Image (cartoon, rainbow, N blue to C red; front, side, top):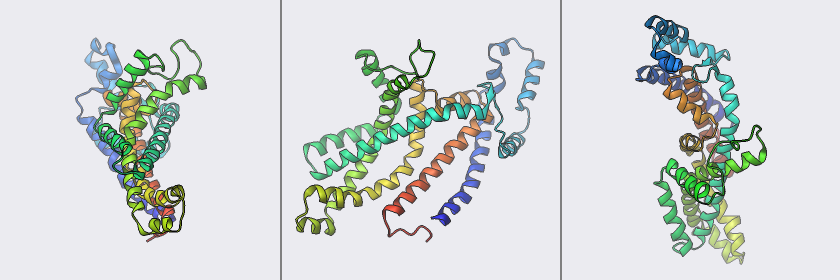
Length: 321
């Protein structure tokens, strides 16, 4: 396990270096002007001399490689720079928003895994039954539904029509403090929408895995020994059928990040993804690079986690092979 983790860590270094350089290259080729984005309406009347001075202060007048290298060396020393769009250190932006993004992503992942596993097991018990056909059809439909469309539909139904849940934000508009009850009520819709957008893959993987496991000889033998159907399903078929889903956890991390970006924007959730949109549209080099590194590291860690979970669940897998 330690050797595999070490190899993955060494592999992550060139990946992160390439990703950060790519961020600066794409941002440099962007039609958006970071100076005008920083100056706002004042940039419309500012002289060219003032704009050039501001460009020098922001460091965007330097060559691409120089900007990337200066940011990289500072980041390795713990200085992620200052965000031009947030007007504060990048580290502070990440610290302020990381917790809310982690809360949303963890809640959504938990919803997707629990609902997907439960529905997958129930559907596998009677393949071709009404539950299997109904949930499978809904899963294939949700696969094609964009997350932002699901979010807008949820706001229209539960916030506007039924007035059951708040439409967005972290707390009530008139509230000056952040309370657990307000955060919980505001979290329901975005977490549910993000979780449901990820649910089809977990459901389909568990359904197929458990269906295949129920047809294997060990499960048939357990039934022949007179074990109850519940014991056969949960004690034998589910463990074997869950193995393919463990590999899915890591592969869904990129989709979860993409979905979170859309959901946080739709529901005005103050997380990392919402800051990514602002950094991209304003060509905020420092913030954009730091957030991209963070997302890339999350994907790499997700892939490592899925491999570790698979190895722990299946003794036949050799970590250090």
